[in-house]
Image 1 (tube, helix red, strand yellow):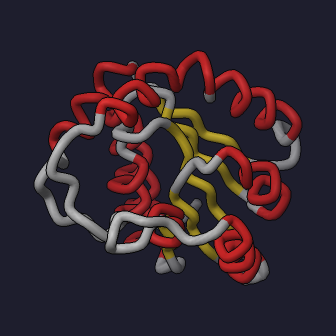
Image 2 (cartoon, one colour; image 1 turned 180 degrees about the vertical axis):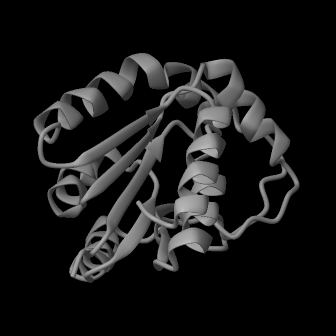
Length: 170
């Protein structure tokens, strides 16, 4: 039996969670949002040890979709996944994506964001130089053994989903 273990990674605001929800509907796989594991509704976070324990339990399962970067744990998730979707979108689109979700209830976050935190905005602006090179370096290691799809626009992601939705396959 072919078990799918899918990672959806990329900058905040790039469309990962929207894509993950649509993919979950197509596949029926259980979807885990790393933000929902790490963050508490009171705006605090759990400990790294607790996060790592919860993530380990997810990774032990045969099938899943995991949405989120959390670069510290990316090597561990890459070892276990069968497929990777990377959202590598222009910074401005990611910033607009985050702005559009301010004051919106979301299933991938345990609270409603009421403002665009300047530190978070800077993280997104720096993502292409601080995070993406490391991600691409890690992906290079798994090039031959994992299915890797890179989206440079939300339209590409939607077209991929439409195509796969008709065929019903990954």
